[in-house]
Amino acid sequence: MTTSASRVTEEAQGDFGLGPIAADARTRVLDLIAQRELRSGDRVGAERELAESLGVSRSTLRQALGILESSGVVRSVSGRSGGIFVAGPKVERDLSQIVGIPELLRGQGFTAGSRLVSVSVVPADEKSAAALNLAPGAFVVSIVRIRLADGVPISLEHARLPADKVPGLPERELGGSLYELLEREYDLRPHEATERIEVMYATTDEASILGVRLGASLLSVQRTTVDAHGVPFEYSHDLFRADRTRIVVRSLGVRDPQGASLVDVHSVEFRTREAR
Image (cartoon, rainbow, N blue to C red; front, top):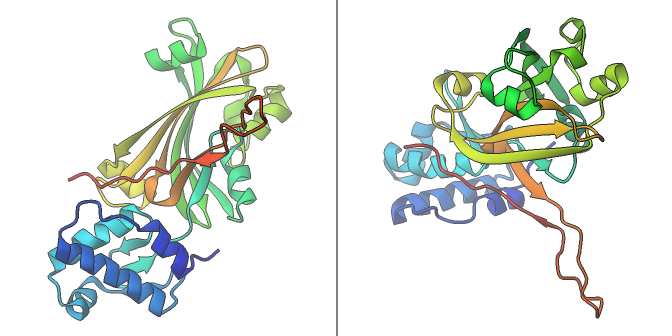
């Protein structure tokens, strides 16, 4: 998949309180991307080279690049072969649908991947027990995975399920969609999910796992999923890269007596700054 220059420009609107020199540098970086018709994965240049060509200090350039990176326009890669690259397209996380991440990614043309970090059977902590309506000391299956879009980490997920509902789950193949596996092997189908979203900032470990800078913005999604009988069977906490994720909310139109639509389908996008 590719990101066109026009799409890049749309992603970076707003100055986020930048000073005039940094704001101008940001605009000129966008112009470079547009003029060269750069696409996802293309190299814009090294930080030192860009600062010299734009005639600004590296600290000023970093301010501009920080906003562009938070907006999902560019990404910085360290190392001898690193530099500033055009970022990939954003994954749309539609809150009106309950689907697994692999299905979500495939539906948007990404190649879905997964890395299993850990799976274990442990006593439920206080939050998990409350969310899953479990007695104190009840066991849950804890699954931690990294989700990939076109080979790049997009989210870190930690799901917990009542152990008595999913016997043998730790021994099964956990690289694909958890929902598809639960429906096929345990007759568990998601009927409704409550999700709470807030912005967090990447810790050292989270930054390393997701390939972002320390303090980069992450979208924290806490989800409780219930079956058709209202019985919860999943409590999860996912961390999505804010530079690669757009939150979408789809609402059914409500019509007045004259037939005019009062509510339309709409989307919500989180724009965030990195922690200072």
